[in-house]
Image (cartoon, rainbow, N blue to C red; front, side, top):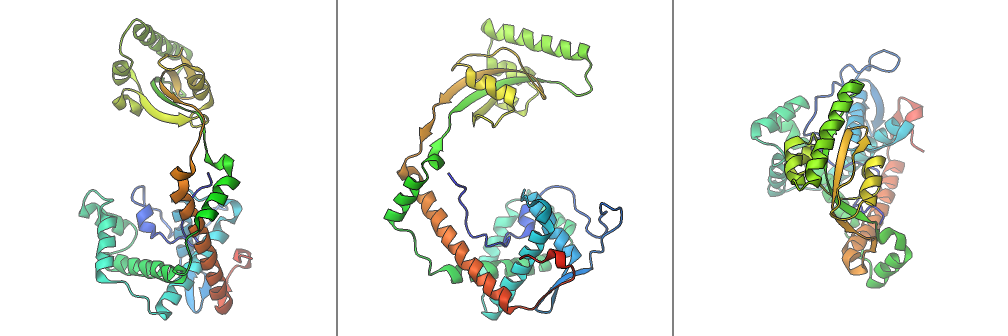
Length: 333
């Protein structure tokens, strides 16, 4: 079915820290451009009601988007700046309407964030990587929560869809509720490196041929996976769980879906190396019942309506705001 979503409203409301718990620190002080120059992170790219948005702010939002796998193509900078402007406008509106965040709510959120780290020291190190101390982090989080409370306030009048509307949506998109065929498979991988010569590849294939012969003579597939597979799934006896066609590379997928339940395939070659595949179970194509997806449809429809409300609210905030762009190419129409 269509991807279900909550309120996005053209603004990324997740505090960037929550989505940046791993990876190297991105240096926004001197980022090389395609032309080989350097970007001045203090350069002002837009002014919203007298508040500056700098190149550094924009770069951070772009990196946040990349870490969340947001694909915007050539309009990435424009969309990122639009999100920053929306965030500024919502923050200003929250202050104007005197939206408050209780100390209890703040502490609960901080505890929730810290649960994503192995220790408090690791959490503090991450803050340091992002150029923040605990005081600045708390200030940013308070602003985040105020905006979330503002959105809740502006959308509290949105009614839940009726049973008739839910059923009409379900009946209107039958293809969205099809569950494609799936297989539950295990495999043993003998990996091949790009630098391997033909003799090395031959020996690796021969190794897997011997493993396959042993399995067909009665040896345990899962035990051989634990002993010999180069895939992390070896810790589960090679099991990959259920997957649908297209989830795996084509040669692997084709063999998996053409092999019968409880059967072990011949050797399959992919860009990762040589595999043998055992099919554990199969699920035929089915249609998800209305009862199974009723709550998801309700969340989707309500979320869509709330998004519309917030988009209209943002449009009004933008129309009343004084927004100046240093670069006219970043103006979102």
